[in-house]
Length: 370
Image (cartoon, rainbow, N blue to C red; front, side):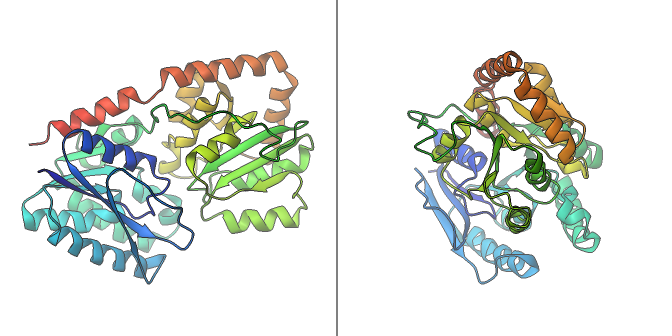
């Protein structure tokens, strides 16, 4: 039987893209083993395929990557498999080495423009290490997938290789009855804004959204997820006495998160144009907002703007300054008929962007593997 070893450095619980990959591999007759890591706050995990979450001594920094990559290498080297599937650059080296040694097929899915993320751009020596790994391995890869055409074009310009594009558009999922705001302890007399994501990090606009709430007394901001900016957000909420206007809800199962999002009035995606990775991003939360039938307030970045303009489902701001956010939110909610029209457009966009085409694109790539 065909067997695929799929690896990623996160804790697997909220990575819907990787889950979709594993599901498609199963449909194509592969026995799937998904490998990640276990964190103290990791959510319970139930999947229709085998998973392994490694408990590591280190949780971040060079020692984490060294420990994870070494352990992953030996798992891949001795694990029974016919296909290795690497997700992002931080798993690529052990996958590439194991595939070379064992003569196996390797598929690489880069979820972002990895060496251009702000955490690396601001640390040039660390970036140089990852860039050296990428420059050594990337030209040798045969099958590479990424999340949108902008990133595919950037990689083609850098390495002269054509990439397959599979966007992060989710398939429709049964979410169950919509709980009321009262059940979720949400106010009925306020406009609810939501900013969600497992990577709420530096330069993604969360800090500015919190500061904007100082001037939005009729609104409540829900921040759902986690990331490097979380401790900063906690401090800001306390420092500006915004406990009644901002709720930091943390990570939660997808269906539960969508209960809150479906009760919101506006979804925020506020990445800054500070690096190529954010400039070209097309975040999952955009499609979750559309699925929830709520308008989008977004920064004017190419991939997101194409969706917002193409489906007339929200409004764009040039930059996520608190003042710009306040003006845009007030203008949206001051125009009740316009806001209703945006909600209808969001619902239409969700029906058009249901993920079916992306699953078909992924299936076409994987079923053509020799």
